[in-house]
Image (tube, rainbow, N blue to C red):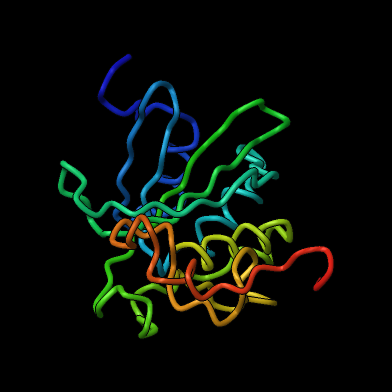
Length: 185
């Protein structure tokens, strides 16, 4: 495999043609193509990828969060939101990545305005639970999400456990967590 992105990929060419004024980055790894966009461009670019007749990425298969803390290479931001798109009519997968750089301490006690990105639930309703999981585990919030609340942990949970600076043994929640058994449930 080439380490150089395949800029002849039909999706990259369509994006460059549609948005000539925007600066995008592209990568390819093991045959998977990824477009790196700015957080402000999420809805515009994702709408184009879904609605353009040449592309028709009609299925959002996953939304994931990534924490690049202590990553060996320099990244444009500590966190990333990755969207995995599929064009079922063309049997093609495509990834879109948005980097976010926190501006406040990442201990989860303060809501950081830099960790917001637009929700894609208006384009793909199935993104609702996936975005909630990214919010719950990483603390990345999704603007205009219809029901942005924790999905795996309880609402009062004080942190986001998939952040790499979260202690492996937790912050004492095991010691203070009330055990529920069949008789008390």
